[in-house]
Length: 113
Length: 109
Image (tube, each protein chain N blue to C red):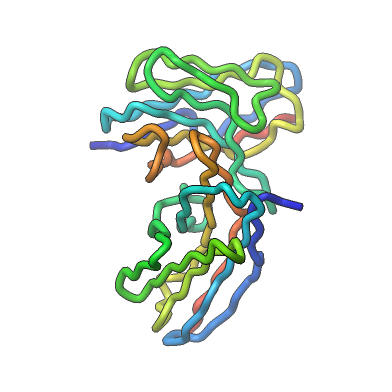
């Protein structure tokens, strides 16, 4: 039981490049989330998916898109990366909706130069 | 004003000490409250939920004061392994989840 997995662990992009961050969970959870964490700030919700087939904007959605591919997988896409998107990205999942405990993946450290 | 505020610390305490963290929140309609723990360069993990009646889990006690809009975490008999960042989390209903920036704790021998 791997829990929540994320790929890649590290990534360096040049401004304007695109990439997709992958997330998968094997806990049969309904809800999944993408957060970013910046120094001195709390985790901020980018997008969430309350259930398979639905996605909604969180606090900081600009510059990102998401896809809930199936119940297990939730991807985050940066279409044209900017230095302001340099951050640590965490995917999370929760069994209940609205969520109580959220289970986090190990994170992706992204640097945009 | 931030929706959830925490003293960033760091708190430096000796082993065996008792340490308390507070977290204030601005939205009086907030419904659920949690403390998460985050080790350096790792993901957050749930430490405990915070209930109106207060709750205790071993050396950890969490309390909620709705009137003053703050939650607290008390750690008794600190261990070296308690060194981490403690994140206050407030949910305002639905999926709105607000994380505090965290309080860093260092427990030294």
